[in-house]
Image (cartoon, rainbow, N blue to C red; front, side, top):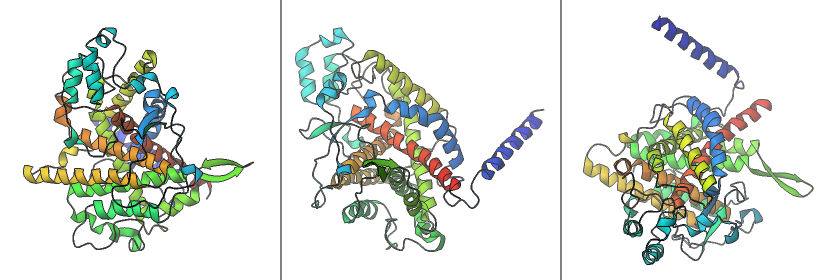
Length: 463
């Protein structure tokens, strides 16, 4: 009976797979399918999971006050080269959020004011902790001593990215919903230099490889694009993962720009929407000499990495002292419940990336490689301060910080598991800035995969 039932189930899945393939446009060149490299997950499973289960809930979460306001310093100087000047195109501009519009709980940033008893404790110690900039805005009120203890906790060695000082005079709140990521017209030598520096100076490659790693470079590969990736297979898993993360991030950003492209407006009003031609130029196998599908698969790989990190950090947010505090008790409870519901869905995903396969083997070598990996990525986060377009810089900083936070989580498993149930002052911590970046960065990847489905439907309809 059991065997018959299993055989019937297999038959059903086979029929569904055949029907799904039949729905694809004949000779579709942009549809990526199959198992991803360096893991056991497939594209189809991620599509179904993201587009119908996770994406709708993430959209609602990103609209909540806690996640829509992001504090960022867009005036930090480029640490690597003199910037030629900022993009003067109006769509490059970022409109900062007036202080009066930011929820009071986010602005105060330091204390959970739901607890009157805790607010009355030791005002002097409270002010001292505030000066140290040490208190995580997601934490419930504990004793002021706990706040000061937390101030002494230094997790700089765990950070995979450069984090803006939220107390800096130039740091401003930005409403992400009012400053969406989309095509701004920023391109040319300045944009080229950013990506070239990311690929050529920070990605790993064998010494025997002299050709550019930047996929935008001329003559990126031979027939079918296979020669471009031959060098990658000679690298260790960690270095292959690093390249795929950067390539996936690049692909995701290009998808956003193609999906929110400045189209011809009516009555002088700008209008953004999907630009099939732009998408084709960036991802068509012929236009990219076979590289396009590889880029899209790397997008899925990056999605899988961040999904794994979010599923692992769920236990951190389940603790009672972690509140998504804005000052509106009812909304804050709803926001946290929605986040926990999303985490529950994420933990149910059956084909997570196994990060334990990374930095394994000889402990000394693994430690050295992990530090090299961390410093390379941290350097990339610093390059974001060289982007000449403010809106591109905003979203570049947010998405690299989100990925950096995901990497911090992935390699802090012991610290997360050993968190005390009631004390927020010791061990693994996430600042509000990291939390907002983490969720919005993953939201960008979820949006990319959803937009890829839209482009494939447009291409099918145009045939």
